[in-house]
Structure formats: structure tokens, C-alpha cells
Amino acid sequence: MVEKGGGVDRLSEVFGALADPTRRAILARLAEGEATVNQLAEPFPISLQAVSKHLKVLERAGLISRGKQAQWRPCRLDAGPLREVAEWIAEYQRFWEQRYDALGGYLRQIQERDTRAED
Image 1 (tube, rainbow, N blue to C red):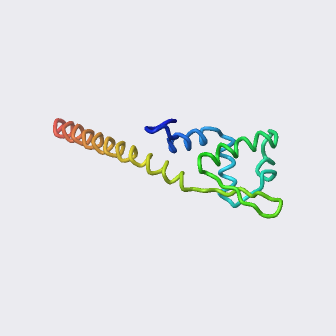
Image 2 (image 1 turned 180 degrees about the vertical axis):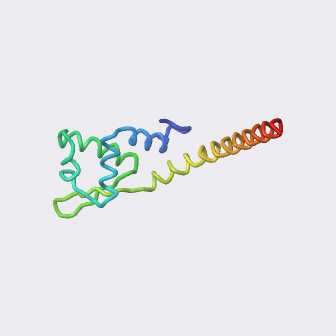
Image 3 (image 1 turned 60 degrees about the vertical axis):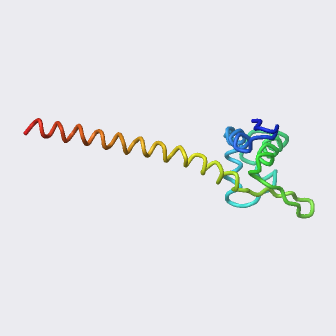
């Protein structure tokens, strides 16, 4: 997770945060709107402390931010890093689409050749 210059590779940080199903579920909940730690913890059979640790990982990856309203510290989704992940994946999607197009062309050639051989 270290890049040149000793900094943390943001993409690795985001993928690391997304690797855990509990953190993905928390992000899905926050996509519906902001929530407190207690609200986020409700569906999980884990302690508030464990949920707080998950939130710290998400915050470090830049996927969430925490506000401050009186005694509440609502969490909200920050989808910017997810856009970076989507852009990174899109590069590979283009690669595979080109491969599938080439395979499709090759299969059409074989089919045409077989059709001509039958005639």
C-alpha cells in the first residue's frame, strides 16, 4: 500500500476498505443517507467498538466523513474514491471488451468458413 515517496496508495486503501463485507454493508446503508454509529451498528451482531473500527478504516480510505451536530457525529458517504475505483476498473473493462470483440470476429470467420465448406 505504499507508493513512491512513502505515501499511501489511495486505490489500495480503498480496495482494502471494500474488501470487508461489513464495511460494504455500511457503505450501502450510507448511500441511503447519513446515519449515526448506533444506527449503523443495528443490523450487525458486533460491538459498537467493532463498528467504530470499521468506520475508521472507511474514513481513512476517504469513503466516509463524519459531521458534528450537537452530541451526534453522523457519518455520510463520500463517493469520490469509488469513482476512482470505477475509472481504474473501466480500463480493464475496455481491455476485455476488445478481447471479446476479437474472439467474436474469430468465431464469425470460423462459422463462415464452415458454412462455405457445407455448400
